[in-house]
Length: 490
Image (cartoon, rainbow, N blue to C red; front, side, top):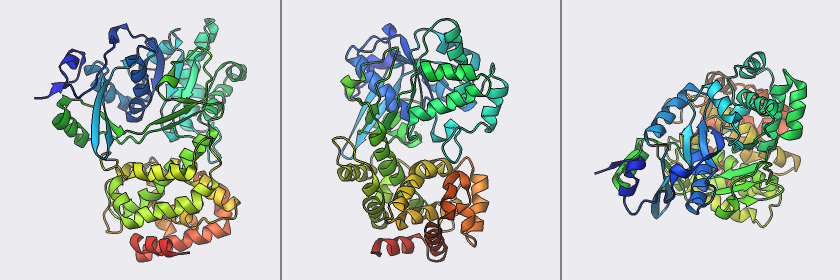
């Protein structure tokens, strides 16, 4: 027999399942969060739940928000569960479940007036976001792109915005006009200097219609930088089934994740914040070293294993790590081409950090998929892989494996695996990527001419030559042969 998750069933949950021991009816809102997906619930919502279990942060409960119609389905599921989520933390030899109670409401997604009104209320002191790497409207040089259609819409219609940033601007203006202090804006996405990037996008949009207001934001609104980390795959019927069979819980949208979690954050919250240091959040005046370490070693590492595994028809990430060629490929690139160029991090051994990453990727319980890692390369490659490549080139050091990674991504975007199986669309720009990747089979430079990804690297002769070499070899000999060749090279 299974129990359908809701407030009424909490007392009847199995004793092995943790659940809120605090009075959820006594919680009050403090944070409005855009992007109520799996990562947010496995990360920020989990830290807050831990604080609440200690009797802390009772006035910092979460209110969800979203800008897309597609987010309504998730809201409907959570609303039917009284905003509760089952979190399952998994190690190789054990799984532990707990129910999170830190969310108390979720504004109807794509309802701009309701979302803006909620942010205008005085109890909202932090607005946070997990809107993916592609949600910040950046150009090839990571600068704000005022020509993006969504930005153009909000600039032309500032009182009826469709983007997160347009809604935030409306709320900040309403608070300013009402004499209410601005909330802190906290980015929780995997973007270098994410607080600074968020500031640039928000002020960039403001400047299109009201430069004085943009200046006010620059002077009055806090944007703390952060580094966030926890491997959290998408929820499928597999996870829902495990939850029913192993824990007796019926949850329409559970979250499965690794047991490891990390959050490094600048302490810049003018209206206050939860005492997150009590549950393991590391506050520091400079997040950048931690951020670069994670983006280079973990996120670029994900890309390194993703595309060869995808071309070899491997489904799960831990299965890719069990393949000797892929594991050796990852270790060679990391130790020779990525880790040596990661700047020093306080109290951290970057080589040991990679060893831990390798262990985390290998966790067989997570069920993370190669397809998820391959997703959205057009946004992830320029943020994770290309900076590591630039570092290696600037140092006059080895970069051949990173050139091969670029070739593997190109080969993947041609739309078929080595076995001839079709790859379903797996990028917002898939329709554009496929013809370019197929043209690159005979003219490799076509791929490097994607300025939004490679910028001036297309003119780097050494990189272009090695990219072309590897791409030709992938088409001619296949992924396994090419990985073997690279691994055995001196």
